[in-house]
Amino acid sequence: MSNGASPARNGDRQVTTWWQEVEAAVRCSRPARARRFLRWIVTCRPDEEEAWLVLAHLTSDPEERLQWLHQAYTFHPASPRVVSRLAEARSEFLASNVKELVRLPHMIRCLPDERRRPLPANGVSHNGHHPHPLDRVGRTPGFLTRLLHVIDLR
Image (cartoon, rainbow, N blue to C red; front, side, top):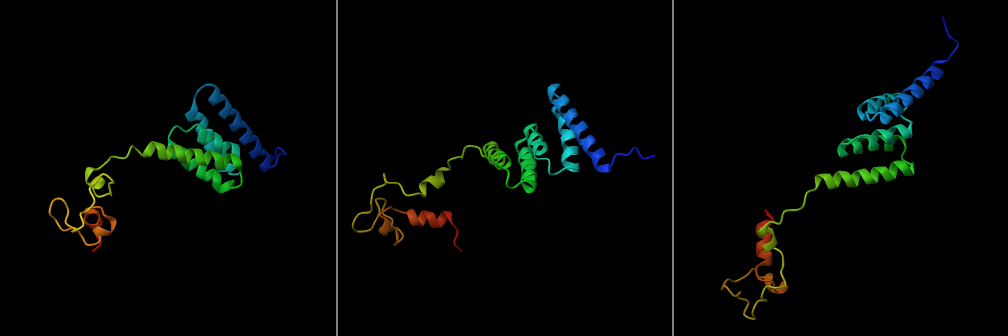
């Protein structure tokens, strides 16, 4: 009943067939089909660096791409191609998730501002309030007081 081929050779043939299916799916613009065959390849042969890279390339979701490249890195930590693609994917993932920071007015007021008037020699601010004693050192009215309100040290 045996056809004379070893199981390893049959596995090689199967992986080769799957690679042909991947190439055909990519030519026909069917990335989902190509990804399915690539997942089969990396399941059977996790040492197939090219399969991991192509799988990550065919994925449109930055988070999923990052996950595939992390998997590739676990099997190929010394590969310059995996390392560079992983760095690119991290940058892309961060860029897609970090929106422009919103400026909060109450946070801006707590930061020192060179445009503010320095404290007069008597230590009383222009509005008549006695600042925190340490505010006199920085000569920025109310900076430490406002900072202590923002950061709860209790």
